[in-house]
Length: 396
Ligand code: HGY
Ligand code: MN
Ligand code: MN
Image (cartoon, rainbow, N blue to C red; front, side):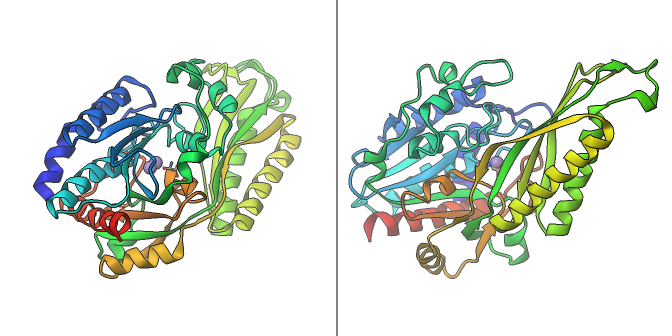
């Protein structure tokens, strides 16, 4: 299976890879469109009918689309900017190979099985993560999604080529199970020496846009005592978020910032940064964000600047179906069951059908960076495990 995996993986590995090894696969960008074409070709090669849901999500069907008892698997193609190549695509490649493996075992599902490719999981282009699965489930309205715009002002509707269709409850009502396979974004499986694991939960998490405003002015002629510099308030807030997260045993990251006018010799008038905050439970997450906001406002008072902090997307804690997780872990020979701090489409879908995730060991634990990698042998173990799980869910 390792060689089979490596051969199929090699078909997509170059798509969207930059010279530095990081991937640029924004939703509906040329690389992601090429991956959609690859998806359709893989489906055709397996005589799987492809449907779309009007929201940018693709589904390759073994059986009648959205028929009773439908089982969904798959993941997403899009990446964070200069991210790794496995986060997302591994779940889709593994799903197609799992179909092949099931067929080689002589399995004929009693229920429809779909390989899914969900759009804009990372939120890297339009700012809302899991946008495709949120639209499908009604977690975001088509109107709000349609108006989301990228940094060039192109709206999601324009990129999609139509207003999104929105929720499809009549289809979801037929879904009996969802399983997303994903590279582990951490080293838990390394620590327990297991190539595959099952997810127990997703930490609550969210992203907040922070706007700091002050008085733009000349860098050389403005006395330090006269400045109202929003970059100072921003910098202090970044440090405060880091400290508050450490104190709370939570995670806080500011990885994206914009300054206006962004000139070397001008005090900025505005600094916009995004806080990514996550914690093992919602109460801790709420306390963390409140503490960061408090520290930012206090500092703004001292700097003579203003600050506004607005939630762009918040994902509640996901507790995956414990019975399903235990059943699958046992089916796979007692593999570990573990939580994750990373969000996934499976998390969004878990409110609509019994949902599970399979994790594939990541030797370095690195993700959202070019070093993200999983050995072919572990990816092959993931395919075999996914085939066993899908056989169980479509035939038992
Ligand atoms: O950011 C996340 O947790 C996921 O990779 N979208
Ligand atoms: Mn990701
Ligand atoms: Mn992902």
